[in-house]
Length: 189
Image (cartoon, rainbow, N blue to C red; front, side, top):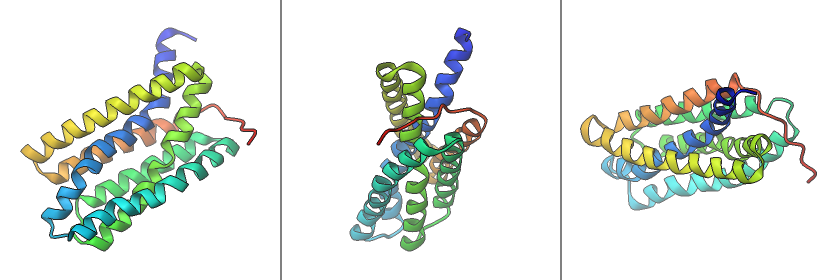
């Protein structure tokens, strides 16, 4: 495989992790402020985070297992990234606690697809050490750019554009994942 194609494959496998962490760096960092500006109580602000973690933690484990058994794990990632894109887009238009918490649940379900399958793909493709290294790089790059770009968008354009940027990156990750053949992970667990 040529060097250029090899680099492209690494980007294809790593993009969902970048999108995940971009969302965490932008939406995850700024959602509490958005909620407080829209009149949420401190309890409601905390519930936005709590509901997300209550859903994403077990979902990541379940999706990892589904990815191991799937003939086309890329489709799972594509659907997950699409769910995140939709949830984050809707957040830009929601200012009430219950609908915003509902989108956090959808977001958590969507984002739970990226880590286990992308890490598995990168580790199979590059070997465990290099796969984990690329995954960590994509995490750091996504988190840093999400928080910086998100903050700039909020400061100079408005909150909705922070949400739109995360939605757009997840949509891109969905399209790329759908058109990418992820290697199958054959788990023995």
